[in-house]
Image 1 (cartoon, one colour):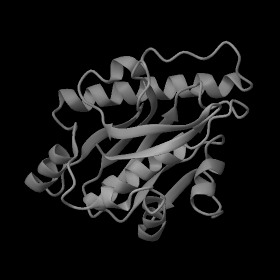
Image 2 (cartoon, rainbow, N blue to C red):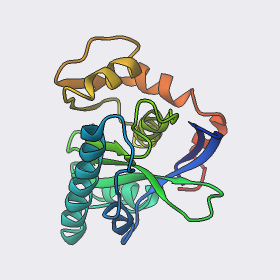
Image 3 (cartoon, rainbow, N blue to C red):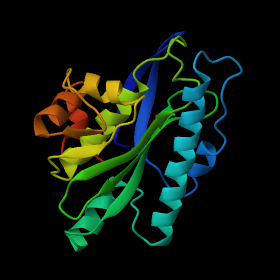
Length: 208
């Protein structure tokens, strides 16, 4: 496990667990469907497409033995070759739900110079309706990325921003203007990690 946190739902706070995806976890992402009522259908469609793309990239890296399914495996691969590129997916799972469901997905790559590239970040289409009453899942996923970055001693997370996502990253950066790319340095990543309810989750000896 990477961390636990709460997101806001129409019925109140919902505990969520962030963890590394394991072999087979992408099957649930393939089943994402848009709710019958959604105020922004194009956003629902985009989230489904991004989840499929993340799963496709994930399977490709798995076949090449260039993916990590746990923090321990990620550290082991980097320790074996400090310039290796390793991909991983962070998934968000609802805690205590009757049926375990994947609420969000972030596909990342650790580069040869120990930076993290965020290629795809998306939440379940039921959660990205602006008037649906859900908040905090995108932020939560990025906090998870910041946690992994600290354990890798990574000082930069960067990626491409789309027309619809640039305002999200701008908000995470405290208002710093974002166009088609974003950069989260050490200070911005530390600010995100400090939003976790239990800072003790980040101790070096915590379980991966």
